[in-house]
Image: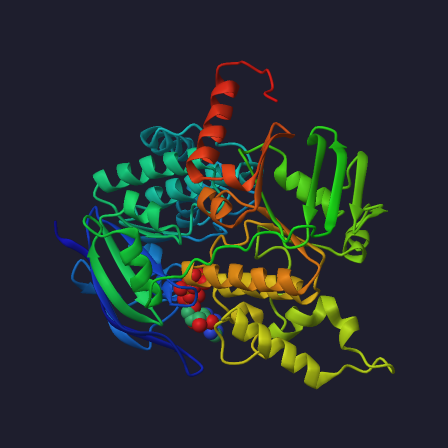
Length: 509
Ligand SMILES: Nc1ncnc2c1ncn2[C@@H]1O[C@H](COP(=O)(O)OP(=O)(O)OP(=O)(O)O)[C@@H](O)[C@H]1O
Ligand SMILES: [Mg+2]
């Protein structure tokens, strides 16, 4: 197969920070390339350059042999390149049809001029993909998985030859991921090239032909996926094999930090009871609709429960608002790193200490600057947040490094109960191991327990002391440590799927 695109010696600096240096590789027609690298290694920067949104400082990009010359927001599209960013970038209030055919309408000089033939074309593209979506629904009302498909359909309607997916699977269920992969294989069969970015290496191995690995802005390897294992890719990404630190046992007689009794919320969850001890990580897992995120939101006062009790450190607390929760010592790191939890146009250091500001005031309520600086420095180091100064805006950090700032902010508050919802989605494996090592230390030093909500069975199995499996808003099982294994959790989750599909609704246990 011939090359569609050739990237030659690309370099890019941001105010002295070398985000990319001398990166070269090429992509064949119909080839899927998995782009991997630790947080801040330059992946997003590279695809912005391919899309024409950013201009490289040095090097060339050739498309079917001809140098790419135009730049600006629409440049990529002009060259047959479409990027589907993590936040997808569709027009949320327009319908699926209007989004898919926006370019046709723009060409005609009237964005609102949708014609019958546009409708026919949009339908044909979706049919070809084997997708059924209500094309007259506003995009914001569609689930994320469908929004992605609309974005892919739009790319096809624009005659794209290279479709770039930047961490597309983070917000998808495993079934949706399977479907997305089918679609990608169809695109490839049609001669379309794909760049797929993910921190989940097993996905790259399943989907891609070639893996391209960046480290600190440099190309470390570009090799066929066949014959390359997960461990090898991980090692190439971080420069050494990542260390998984086992969690210590919960100390015998460790105090209970949280006690939840018969907590219920209509249409969300029912009769949830569990406890959490100092030094303990309680893993929470369940299929979509199991109620686990809703439970977390209730514990954090964002959507209070209807009945039941929450006790922190032996005292019953009314948790009706976020304020109540924070006062009780409950912290929550949300799943969606960009929309919640950060002030993007504020410097990194303010984002870290803002929530804990009271602790940095002296008796005259003046801010203790040196102690703030000290603290911020500590977090930059322990979480290896990649930046040259804490004065930089959070928006200048790579996605994964922004997520680390959210984590630092909550850890700085030394909560008694830390709820982490998908804490390492978008965080590279090296940093991931580091984060759990810090949590381990914090839990031994402080009166703290952790509720870890995650879709990643491996993460839940490796780090939890007990695992609570939720189904249809109820606690289905709580596994003690000696029954925790990836296989066991997977088989219980699959069992759940079957009971759901075959219509047997009887609850076990
Ligand atoms: N607009 C910007 N201003 C300053 N620095 C930037 C800007 N955009 C990116 N950077 C820096 O360039 C480097 C590469 O960032 P990039 O977003 O490409 O990383 P990434 O590989 O996509 O990481 P992640 O996996 O965390 O998304 C980082 O050090 C980042 O802080
Ligand atoms: Mg990125």
